[in-house]
Length: 276
Image (cartoon, rainbow, N blue to C red; front, side, top):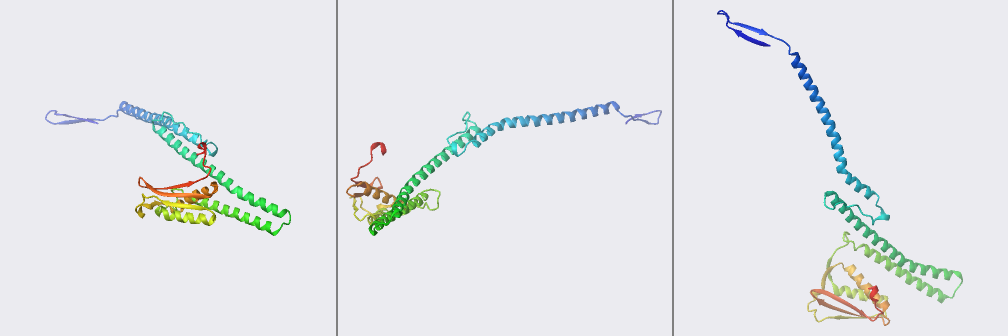
């Protein structure tokens, strides 16, 4: 709509005219259609491009996941490809490989432990089974029965000791609540171990000496797990008894560089250099 003012001959005249801009409307509709088409095409392009770039970005992760899925108990020695070793994917692969190394070491220790424990338990069980089979083959004198029962009892005690040692090994896990460190008087723990070992082996001769470097009893207090320390002493004392022909051992307690040092000296066969 357009209006124009004309002065006329003393009387103002306003002339109005109205029309429809068919060409302009046509161009606006065409512009609308073009914008809608561009919007739809751009949206489809962004979706396709986004999926392509996302797949390309996630492809290394999928590759790592596929490699990890192929790793099981039987092939823990396998490792994930670390790529260039610099970007985030490489850091993820390195983290997986470090975890696999820890798992492999843990499973290796577990297999070795099970094999050793089975071997140690099989020996006394085989001895018990063999002795009982011999006794059941025929009637025997009372003395032979008593001797066999005594031997079976010793094997049963050995099995019990092995079971206790297995329980102690379970306590050596630092994540276990039983892994508690306290103030331990080291000489008292050593006396307890020697008294217990003397009850097992009455003919065992144990000599304990204290170095002149020990001036204060408080220097013999250490921080640790008393039960595990005692077990270590028992193992050393028992080994010294088993492998010393005279069944004698000498212990020397001393202080060196602020540490308590306990030396076990026997007259056994020793360990060859290649076996140390």
